[in-house]
Amino acid sequence: MSGRENFGSRAAVIMAMAGSAIGLGNIWRFPFIVGQYGGAAFILVYILCCFLLSLPILFSESVIGRRTHKNTFGAMEALAPRSSWKWLGLLTVVSPIIILSYYSVVGGWSIEYLFKSVTIQFRPDNAEIVTGMFGEFAASRAKVIACLLLFLGMTAGIVFAGVKKGIERFSKITIPVLFVLVLVIAVYSLTLPGAGEGIRYLVRPDFSKLTPDALAAALGQSFFSLSLGVGTMLTYSSYVSKDENLMASGVGTAVSDLMFAIFAGFAIMPAVFASGIAPAAGPGLVFETLPYIFAKMGTGGLVLSAAVAIIFFITILVAALTSSISMMEVGVAYLSEEKGISRTAATAGIFIFAFMVGILCVLRGSVFDFLDKLCSNFLLTLGALLFSLFVGWKMKKEDVKDELTNGGTLHTNVKLFPIIYFLIKYVAPVSIAVIFISGLVG
Ligand code: PHE
Image (cartoon, rainbow, N blue to C red; front, side, top):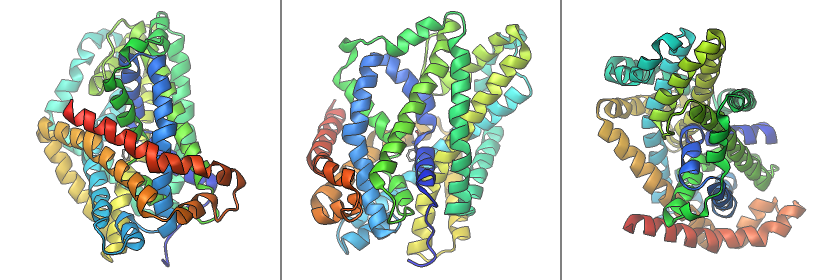
């Protein structure tokens, strides 16, 4: 398709994909569920999930995206014309826009908390009221909506600038910075007195906690964290040039995402335990517990604690942005390529839609929870399952091989292909279906 952009280099592909992957999921869910489901034992299962199930799905999306150089819907139409597979294409246009809507609400919260950190509102003298600040902020709806607007505005600004000048450039600059920032916080956190308990929470293996629930949690988390099943990786792969090594960039992405999640765990949990608070997941952890810890740290020097807080909320904000742009891009690619709408109008349209749904989420917490459950427990898994079925059973094996090995020229990929194909065709769909159905029933 003429006028379509590609990412500029291998590094750019990995940075953009890792940018999509690294986000709130790594920071506020991963550290918590690791502890909840048995520390190192869970990390082991999680790594297996990543490489045996998630990576094949990532490869599947990559194959579809790069083979066609089209948006999710266009790609399905190109590979399986006038078939019901177009519904998968449509589903994966809609689901990332839904995620974008509620994800941006949280992105907005991080803007407010960055502001609170810069203006040193977490101080030892007000530590006791710091946790209450979140409730107060959430109650001022206009403020929350203004932050949502700002976050979505930034997202739209980057997407509007284009695949190369916007998404690629932003991810290339910010992803390395994010790694540095999370490591800075981890080093600091690990030196706090009492950090040992947090380390034990993350690494002490407890195999008795590896229940079927833990398995479902590992799978769901690794899909969400790698942005799978919702067409984002498919769309990003459609901007990958034909001479790029899809397997190498997929592995690079998965490893970066995994490393970031583990670093985030070591940045957060030691500090939480050092302060003697029980760990929680989600908003409680990031917007109540951690600000309380930052406030308490102030006794050792206000500037240092403010600096740590600022670094932390910048990390969250930027990590959320590199993910939200990938969600918006899916819809923008669809609207501009399938409906002939200009990139500007498409970006504006999705911006407005996500803003409206986001407002609903702000006004009704139940809408927020419903959309989050719908996406992370259902749509993501369904999408992932269908992508693996499509590539494993609908596409021709030679075409899949051609795409993953660049026409047989990448020798390591050629050697690995039979294993990868087996994972895509049998292991991934069967395991996902079993875990998915047991989750629905249980
Ligand atoms: N992977 C992102 C995170 O961990 C979330 C995401 C999901 C992004 C789906 C794109 C699509 O926060």
